[in-house]
Length: 66
Image 1 (cartoon, rainbow, N blue to C red):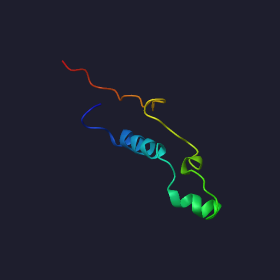
Image 2 (image 1 turned 30 degrees about the vertical axis):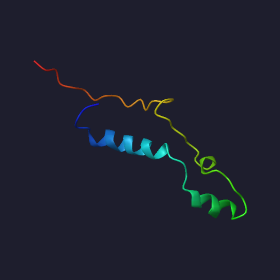
Image 3 (image 1 turned 60 degrees about the vertical axis):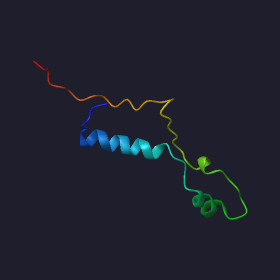
């Protein structure tokens, strides 16, 4: 990828980076209670993997070098 990324592309990459993670462990305690043991990945609705699905962020127009 390019050395300098535009701000809009950075925002998309930051959001995608957050979508790969599970929910924090304490959210399952808050949602289901102390007695229920549920894996935090069940609360994350949108799961992304860098292997499975690509972001499809289109490259911006680059000036022709002459």
